[in-house]
Length: 122
Image (tube, rainbow, N blue to C red; front, side, top):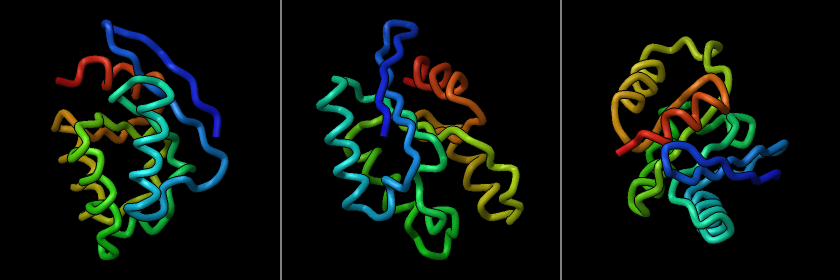
């Protein structure tokens, strides 16, 4: 996993680019949060979609809810960037839409969009 930092609007954003799955369950989410926040000093994290288990995108597994709740509990603003167009199931599309309306979790198409969203999240 490659970790870099970006700064925009006075916010430091940790950007993780994974070439394998780093978020597969709630414990891996906690480990990810603690590692990135301590290494970068940031409470704003972006991760490419390839770093997340496909099970996350099957809402019936409740994995997405469990993982994302960890980010909210630890006050981490989190963006997932990548191509979500292959997900056509309405409940998942609705879930992504609702997350994007909030201020904690974002599903965006590019790393730059993640930086933009995380830099203005309240």
